[in-house]
Length: 281
Image (cartoon, rainbow, N blue to C red; front, side):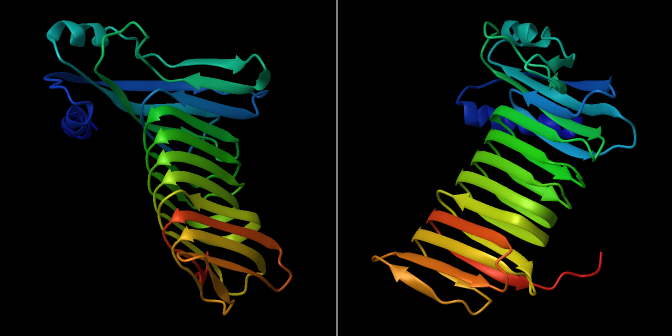
């Protein structure tokens, strides 16, 4: 973890445009009990990468680190005084939601970097929200309940999730595989690839700029509406597509009962809907 944090500082220094020559890393950890009256978890992070896996206890368990960087030793010292404690309390507007707030710097702290790398374990059957205000990648695996993810900018990865996923990123690549249930993902910029083993009622994959690939079982019944403002639309189900204007394309059609509504969108890029033979599992 420390090696990853140190390596990330060099990238952040270039992105921030300053020297950020004064740097440090530290471990962070939390083990927060989840009361029996809690029905949902919301994790709030200012900046940082988050990985979520299934846990065996009714606990929010987190291990990770923080990377800090500043242009002067004095500014770094101030960042190092930021508390690394996680704060948890029920949402006053929804008491059955436990809000976990990750460590963050205050508005009057000096400029620089204060970014987290978090690995989290919590019950797979407890609905989860991950909200990253700024930049951060999110990886979520083996979920059984609904998952909601929002990040200002970052890649998203969903591994063997069920219970429905809703996700938003300002800029980032998205991949979902071994997915079961509804899937609703929107990105302003970025490619998307989804392998949906058991489609629910709705699949929506939309990007302002990028290519979208959606793979569903070869025997799936669906109603598809796929539109590329600039780009092509293809499919492996034999449904006809048509050109719109000089540069756009549309694919609209129904297969079988039309049980799953599939919506694919790109402002600039290509769309594809393909049959996939999933193995046993």
